[in-house]
Length: 310
Image 1 (spheres, rainbow, N blue to C red):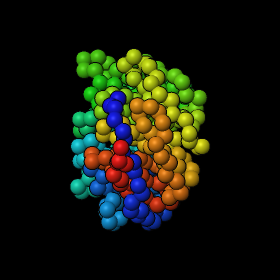
Image 2 (image 1 turned 90 degrees about the horizontal axis):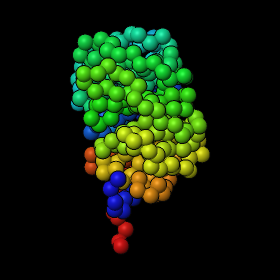
Image 3 (image 1 turned 60 degrees about the horizontal axis):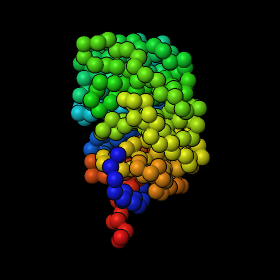
């Protein structure tokens, strides 16, 4: 991890997106931070322009509540998962459903794209992880081994590995290297609750957030736990590394408790409270701004304030 004093954040603009017809289960930002995607209990996926708050689309198709959503790294697609046991792949430009992926037997709780946007991983209440080819919609691998619902997932920056988190309190790392079948690689243990969120940094560190109210930062290649971050009063809903890896942002499930941590020391730099109920998504833009989205309102923009004089 890099050294140097992380800059502080100050709450900037707060925008409200109030046209959902049910509870918001998940939200995510595009890689450039310009678009916000929300998944609702009303069975629809919503797209919003982050700056203006304008509703870009409201997409039906799922026959049950939409549980999770995520953009592809290349910005061309997004995926949504549902209690209807399916994953839908959508085209960003036309806001059209390209294909429906079927294979899970129970609600699908998480989905993530590989760094090259060519593969998709999904997991859910059937305790299984499925790896799909995006272009064809074909299932490539079925990964079994978790003892409870799979709730979170993320690909490593190289795309060689997939991390999955489960209600069985474990993180599994799967080997996806070309020329080998996807196989169970290693297990990271240490949490005492559901692994609700996972996020890889650019250099390959892995952060995990849990219902046990803690965040762990791992070096997955040698299974070492680098830091354990404590301070949340409710379970951790979302996490994100800053582009320079100096900071980690985390959002709690209630009372909109967003914390910003120093990744070198594990110290909590600041706590932002009272804006939302649930912080569904934390995301850093390439220039270091922190965007947060939650259920009561979405997309407050936390701008960097100047570093204090030394």
